Every structure is written in C-alpha cells, then in structure tokens.
Length: 211
Image (cartoon, rainbow, N blue to C red; front, side, top):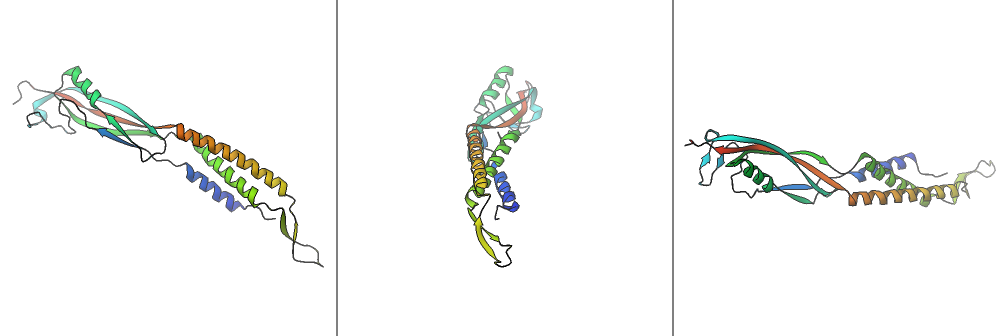
C-alpha cells in the first residue's frame, strides 16, 4: 500500500508551527508639547537658551508611570503614536515645575496577543487540514501490490481495501482543520497586541538664589 509516510507528517507539522509566528507593531513617542523644557539628561536648555545644570535647580518630584499602547496582532507595518504631553502637563501643574529632566523611556513588556492555546490551535488546525488533504487526494482506489503467486509473479493492480476509510478520515481531518483554521484566523483578526512602556524622570524647580 502507498500511504503518507511519517516524514510527510513531520514536515506538515513543522510547516504548521511556522505559521503561527508573530511580530510586534511600532510605537512612536511624540515630542511633548508643553511649555517647560524636557530633557533626557540632568541638564536642560531654558527659554533664554541658557544651559541649566543640576547645581541650579532642586528636584521637587521624582516620577514614574507606565503607559499601554494597543495595536493589531502580527502587524509589523502598523505604527502607533504615544503622546506624553497630557501626563507631563499634569505633573507641571501639580508641582509648578520649571523643567523635566532625566526622562527615561523603557519598553517593559510586549503582549503579542497569542496565547499558548491559540498557537496550538493554529498549528494543529493547519496540520489536520494538510494531512487530511494528503489522505483524501492521495488515496487511490486501486494500488500496485506484489503477487505471492509463484506462477504469476510481479506487481498487479488490486483494489485498495483501505480506500473508503482513508477518504473518510481525510475528509474529517480537512473539516476539523479548516474549521480550526477559521477560528484561528478570526481570533487573530479581532485580537489585540499591547506594548507596556515605562517612563521616569525628575520634575525640577530653579533655585531662587541660582546664578
């Protein structure tokens, strides 16, 4: 009998697993549109164009917060914009800061939206559909079989006793695989991925007796 080999099944499984990888979307941080200077270092440039050093100000409030950006699953071409203006403006209004210094931006976690069960569903569905197609399309009603007759040796065409069984199994596997693949695609198209990004820094105020 000529049936799908173990090598074919392993190959299909590996192809299925490769279909569930994902990549993250991009997040752009827009320049904070607030009225006070914002700097990523301990120095900043004031409204007059002068460089203000740490000796000239007091830290009035260290701060740290996180923001979560939501985007589509598996879309590396998608770009979201995160605006820090409202958060830094609220910080300025609360403590009367003259500037924000030592601003740090750090990506913390990325939730791809792919749970382990969803990945397993995608891999199993693809494997079932492909294996079912191989069984359904590759099973022949008549096969070549070697004769045991010493008077008539060689290969002869004989009915395949597993023909109906293999076709039914193939149709069942294709149905399960296509149904699972549809559920997987729906889950991917409607699901969401998320970046969690942390921000920290210091709100400062110029010393009254600063030069």
